[in-house]
Image 1 (cartoon, rainbow, N blue to C red):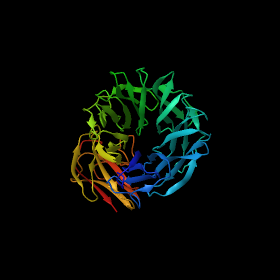
Image 2 (image 1 turned 120 degrees about the vertical axis):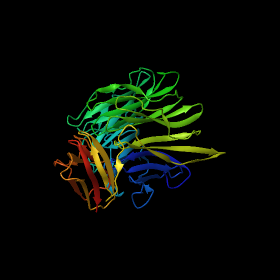
Image 3 (image 1 turned 180 degrees about the horizontal axis):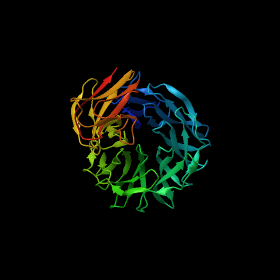
Image 4 (image 1 turned 60 degrees about the vertical axis):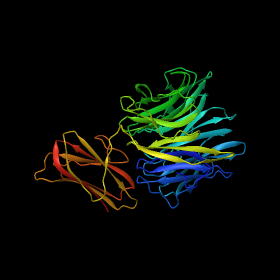
Length: 469
């Protein structure tokens, strides 16, 4: 993924709902300059340069629904360190000058940023040192970087690492973190209510009470349901296993923890992605018999692993940091930094592999002016399609037309930007009787639009056409 080859350090990736993917790395030279490479849903590079320079000491990146993105970076302040937020539009132009995140001084500090579906931004961080030690905080910002609240502490005084953060459709923030109490590490989740400006007590995610439950990740879908993955030591033998737990938006468990890994590892870390139908993918790094690999498993909405884990990386001696990023519609990318050592020198590049989840419907890609012909389905049936809209498109017209008169049955169109439409989640729909329906969007944003053809009644002999102008 990095443009220049050689010694590179990987930072992370972020996927926008419209299909854009941003990959962030830094040169492993003395300068340690961070860069971002962004590609759209078709794989074309976004922006004037393939490698756009980011602020020094960038530590986290997240993408908005329309491809705008935010980065979190650290800056020394005397003997202390501060976090700063910078926000860019899809063209890579800075729209919010670096905004200091933390309201109080910290000796050591690091964190992560997440842009929510409504464009608001949440930052979670944790501290170490003596100003004070091992505390966790979170803070929200609007899409232009203006603070929405003062920093709020979460997790008491035993936050070891903040692992994930996201904001649901009510504006409530969920943070996953590792706690350290009495020498035992637990994976925790905590909710901050933006309406009440209140942090609720944290809840333990792991049900097994071993001494080490860490390496967690947090993912959320459009409904606000969320998934926490983590690694556990000793639960299945003398080593690490990877588990995941699904939660409803209000925090209730959906089912029980699911073990996604099949091998016991000497070391591990996890990353998670939750799709709109409540199925999910979890990736983890394992260390077995002297070989490090990145693996992933797919789990259906009932919590059942659907196939044997997939090895995303080749068996090599060293795999560095990795990320799992993707859309709630089912497309995801696993990115990592392998290292090759030759004598006293080493090289490392950022690599990626892209996948489409087996647990979600795969939409049919439509080209402008090329119809999907002679569609038919039963009442209540869905057929899904997608169209990738280039930048600077003036209009998009989606038309369903009947091949026969009178029309055979009744189908309706549903449209959603960045995700599969449902009866309850849509950016536009038709309600006309028959099979002659249309939707027009003026100046559509670039990215992936998803189209659903829904059978209000059984229908046949219908054509679907998209025209981009």
